[in-house]
Image (cartoon, rainbow, N blue to C red; front, side, top):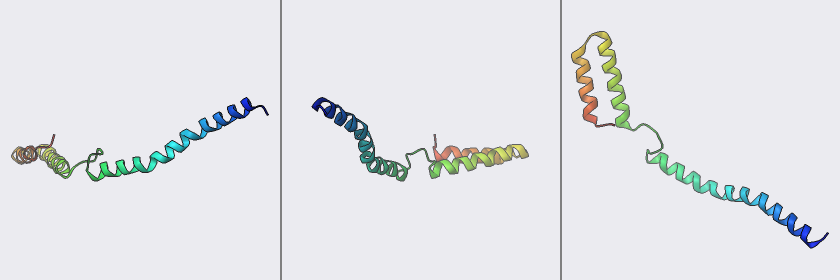
Length: 85
């Protein structure tokens, strides 16, 4: 084979394997970042305060359906005090 064919074949092989190698090398780091984000609660998960506010608002909706507006107002006030946005 001529040297140019060998060079071209080598470049093609390198070009095909290099992206796969980079992806494999990035996986542990990407996994570490995803784990850190989940641990910190910043990965789209609901926080404890958010869950409490959701539960209180759910109770308020039920109280409104049952006609107990005073209880609904109390649940809404408690949810507002949590300060969840």
